[in-house]
Length: 510
Image 1 (cartoon, rainbow, N blue to C red):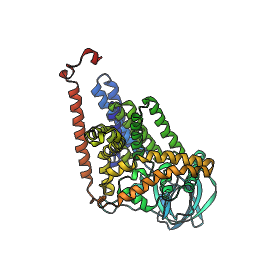
Image 2: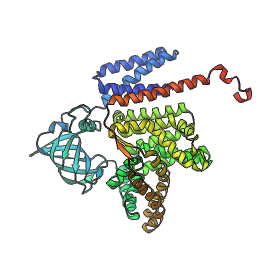
Image 3: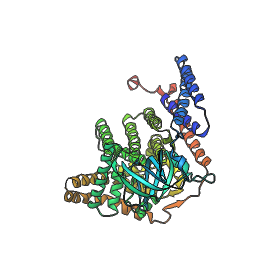
Image 4: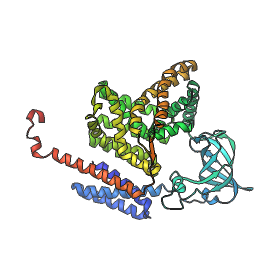
């Protein structure tokens, strides 16, 4: 439990450093004083914990400050607004593609204004047409005008400049002229993995018709760019967008459902644990181990560990330890919406999963034949307790049909992934074999696409809520989390009162 408090202090220190101009020297002094207090009062648990909390909070703020971009002599920000110029650099990450274009993050190494060439450094976002497609490691020369990202003009408006700054992107170049330079840089292993993923995408597109092929690419490889807009809209309307991508939300729910399936089949828990854990990380390596997928794998692993340990305190410790590690690597992770939804959905499963399951056992879903529906609905309802308000705050789309849609569609996802994976493996070996194996995958993928389409056409399937202020969101979390903590503390105190064990025999206590 102490690790949870320390992780919370660390993350609060990061948030405080973002909101307040905390001096680095003060943070360093606070960290040292907190550590000295903890050492001096090591045999006094409360004083020791207080010292460690102060130390972790100060270190969190110090880590955030160290991660900030410093304006250097050759910083690319110095060239913003200087007119047309050329920048040369390497494609930093896998480009983000859509039907109307692609976004390429360029790690700049040099810039040229007129005939003058000079060193430069920093990340620039290039907004380019959809073709030709660029890939990680390519060296590009882009000719255009550097612009500062658009900042918010009023409170509550999306701040694009702040959003990009948290990704270390400091400038934007809109529709530049681009020329590919000879040679490639970057991590050779990552280049090979991403090239292999693109090859897998081409195989799936040849094995299946649309839109099932694009859906298979999304759920197997994490590439959404080829999914048609109307399909994306149907899944959004039905509250099942997490199916389309490899996300913490998706892997957490699937991992919980797989453990439920293992329990139904009465599989050995230890073997099921290692098998599911191995599947998650093998899958992560297969799709390229990008930061988004690694985050999803971490959250999925937490769910599997929580199911395996079957002890609430240890499951929570694992969740906060993972969040601590991710924010230690990159403090800006705290502001990543994908991380927030993953963490909230996982925490919600831990906090409310058993309660939702007990509630559903009082309904007709308690029938053994409906166990699959109960598992899917339990995961969906429990995860949405904490994740849905954040979705509504950012997007305002409330899917009224989401519970029914998740019950109807979610159980098909593991089978679509299983048979889609088999078809992909077969196609990599021999394309006609993969096309034959893809028949089974098509059935489940078509269930997903057609099911989402039909459910989205139901009147009032989703409603658009008006925007609401941040204090409403925070108030909701304060009430919900406070109530849960109160009930948990009350339940724990009732479990240890003397009268609570008077009816147990010595044999039962043993």
